[in-house]
Length: 131
Image 1 (cartoon, rainbow, N blue to C red):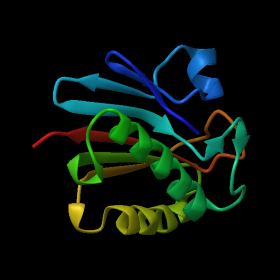
Image 2 (image 1 turned 45 degrees about the vertical axis):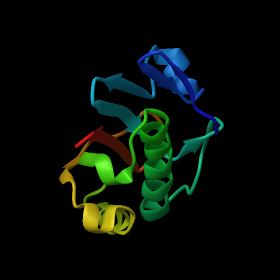
Image 3 (image 1 turned 180 degrees about the vertical axis):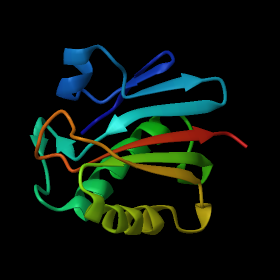
């Protein structure tokens, strides 16, 4: 997946961005605010039934947008994640810990009734800020 940056907006070409009229990320001064990311790649949900790998894929997509916006993994200050099943918190949390290691951003996890596609088990938002 390639990301294009137009001014203060980053686009991945994902189907939902065009359909629902939003950018993958917005560059706001020293911040990069990334929209919710799932494990959807080229229009297909990857890792169906596997919240851990869905989380890793979603974070990969989100971090690509952070980099395109001029920041890095080390600049991430906030992670928000949404799961559809209570038992997925630990698996998604494990993925977040692996991806961010010593960065230790603030983090919020929320259980929701569902996401746009029932095969999606997790959605992740990331915010980064230049120190």
